[in-house]
Length: 175
Image (cartoon, rainbow, N blue to C red):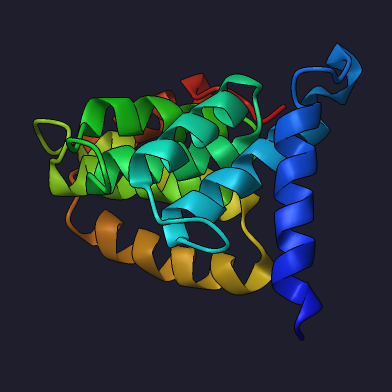
């Protein structure tokens, strides 16, 4: 057990030092390490907790196209953890993650459109993202999402349902 913090520190230092020398082919691996460093800063593990530093590291990883980092960055913007809450920026990063197959990002987009946190409620768009989330999710999560979808559809008009199908077809397809 005593080696665990030391191992974490070694990994952190190796990542920070090596980050500037890795070739572009290591982009995804590098992004994963940057995402992990963001996690360490966000939760104060092995380093002093610093949401602003977490935001920096998540941003680096997200800009490399790592869906998990895009999701984490969106979540920080949605919750305002260490930064001013910015629902539009959160939605932008959730959409990027969802377009790469991140089910939770698609679900969070659906919830943002359902609760109006982007300015107004849009049940058609919420349903489109929820349907996308269901197709991306694990079997266990898909069952819960199907239940959420049924509840949402109960409150929608026929026109909203039809518009939702059009919007779903226009959503970016997962890579």
